[in-house]
Image 1 (tube, rainbow, N blue to C red):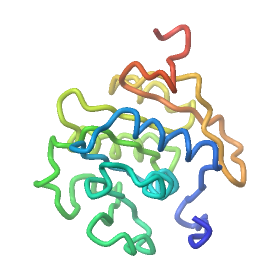
Image 2 (image 1 turned 135 degrees about the horizontal axis):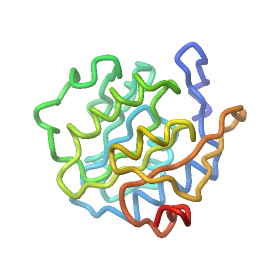
Image 3 (image 1 turned 120 degrees about the vertical axis):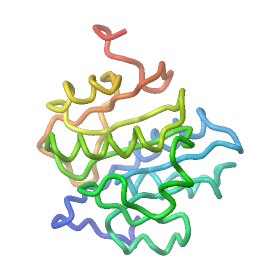
Image 4 (image 1 turned 90 degrees about the vertical axis):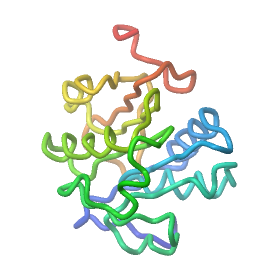
Length: 181
């Protein structure tokens, strides 16, 4: 990630090393060589995952607006949350993704709602979602069955928002908050 500098105009805030590592390990622990994985607007998680040489290496996709990440070739999918279902390979990936790590670029109801539309479109039945976003987005996340966990994602340069992690499955690494079990 040293090659890619955060671009605040694109609302980019890179995860710190611990968060990137935890997200990548969560993917590795919940997938196998046949799994399909997507990281949506979460390039630091994707880069860390790829550095760990996952068995799913050829089945991992990065959905990202920033075209600097097109260095990942066919695994890079240019993605604009404001057009949630308009992206390369849309029909091929529909209802086929086993695990999605997602971090909408903006802390707004519109951005999260549209990004979650993409998640629902991609996710196969029984698929898993790890969402990182602000605590204020909890009511919207809950509507999609995503519950707040005890994990606090961190960022290299800090954030002033209360940032949280949500999942739609029982995760050992990211357990639900006690009041949501």
